[in-house]
Image (cartoon, rainbow, N blue to C red; front, side):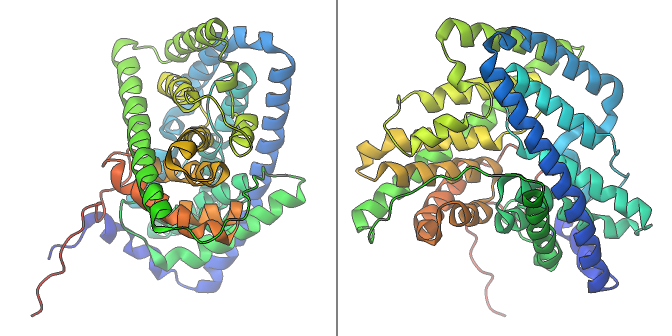
Length: 418
């Protein structure tokens, strides 16, 4: 059997000269990434509060988009590759990530939120973590083949600290690289980086959103079947989101050659639709609506509204990420499906929150762990069912086009015994 080329490139990750050195570097990454996430989250809180207090700021979204596009055109260089650049550098180390990647994505994301773009925050935290981690590789003169483990620690630290889910962050860094394949050799440094980065962010005064799920008894076979059906719908929604985002971004690039004009035009469309439809609830992170999805029935179209505004924002070139909007889409879709499937509203909102993300990012294990960290151990089984089913139904292409195929999603028979 031929070796998987993507996997073979990652084999050197497991051969750090000393485990102690790797853990010390993970600690250094955690200090940098956790502090950067804290600064970012505080700035994001300010931007969100300012926008909500001054709704007229939405009128500036086109100019904000132009500013973001111009900054990346003139200053960004390779930074415009975002999360996909990180994944590519882990698989095939070539060139150090530019340090400017961290402040650029932080400022671009805060500006996007200040004026109302529907974007997330994980992309920012992950890119800051990766860019800062790569500076350590340069400072300590790490060999080319040693860089991937440091970049994976940066991903884990950024993701874990921005959501307050270090276990999910560590596994996400392993799982996001290739569909259906994990690289266990770097689990320990990634776990150390994510755990410490989360603690560092908390020491800087960061607080995370909490959603309550009422206790529930043992699920019946009928309810388990309903969860599987919901998982199918979550996966198809994730597939629609990823496909629409990639297609719209490709259309913008094909039809508008000069990059700053893309988010300018996208900002015009988003602002016009939000005002004409009274759809301001679909702008920004949407955390209040996510909270409501656990507490009361919401309009059945909320998930579609957020999906459309996020695809328009990401596809036209605004910066931030997709994960928190995917949380919104999943939670509100679960809210809408709960009465139809005869499941508790808060339970299905919680499963939807992680399952749509699992399908879109091809990370079902990380998302199952995230459910446990956010909602408690009781959500483990329902979340695992929803995430696994969503992952299998979400198609081959997720939101990160740099993901390698790995083992894929097809169940392959074991080779015959010799």
